[in-house]
Length: 148
Image (cartoon, rainbow, N blue to C red; front, side, top):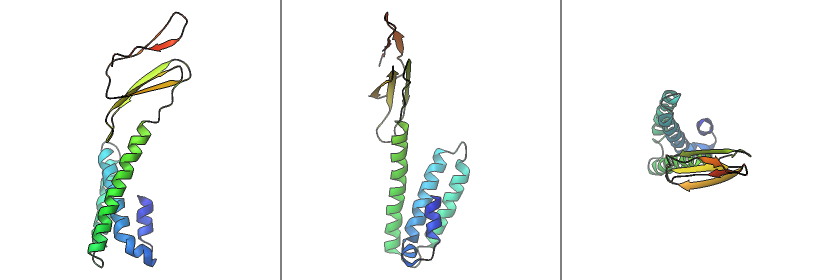
């Protein structure tokens, strides 16, 4: 978001035409991240998003319709990229080589999921799970005992 704002202040002719979209995309991204991080650094992000939004509205004057449409597209793209990043990064799970682990997580678009790791093998399932675990059989192998 900072890179978008930094690019938007340059005076190149092509950048000047894209300035409303760059600023609107940065404002949308900062506001979205600020709301999600409100209990930590979110307030600073929200305030930065408001400042970027005011700058985006201020850069609308010379261009009107095309600039407004580019801002709407930039807002949609910025929020979509953030949501896609959250979806992907939440599902990057590294299983321990031995033993077991399990967990779950929400999804903005895809819904909740839960997983179990058993001896380095990942087993993912859709939906939430509040029960489950693992046990060790007579040969010392870890097995999944899920109640989902």
